[in-house]
Length: 240
Image (cartoon, rainbow, N blue to C red; front, top):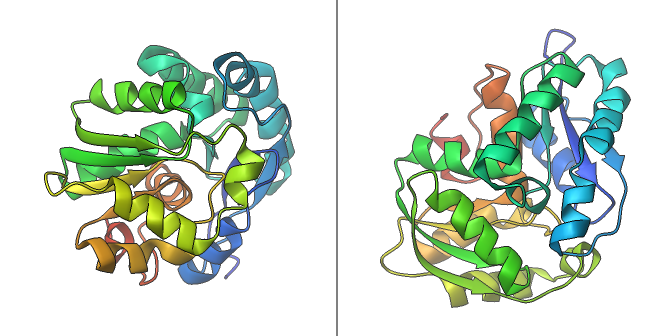
């Protein structure tokens, strides 16, 4: 990293797979600091709405402020889509106001990444319980994406998702792919996936968008930064 390179900051809930961000930073030669906010890590609507509340995200923005980020991303898919399309948009607007910088969330990262790749039909391999997975499907569908198939692993907490092994992640991806899908989405930032994106794309023969990888891409996008690299999938190889 050089002094001239801007910083993109990430607000991450609790602890699970935040080590994906320094891995991505090394590949991209970027400064990608992560700060943490805390709540229960249960994948349930009331808990997720509390986790993504304005007060908690304002706290995250304040923690990032000394880094003077060029952009800030709420690195939590379920803590954004749970508010629905309108509520998630308001969440991002409030975060931008608090941060004094462009802001987004992982839920919108998926929507924007699919548009960049011109993918309109997807399969979803969700680690969440089914009711939460269905809220993610509803969110992307509201943005013009057709979900061909959706599978859920029914895992109740982020901590449990963070303990999934690479082989378990591969199995989740393969089991829930569809030949009708242009891309496979793996939506949980609690899952370690950055080291697996290339392998999964080669295995399935299509773009695989994982939560932490698209979150990083979205941060660079809203900061106006383009990076090409291998190791993070088609989204980064094409320089989109």
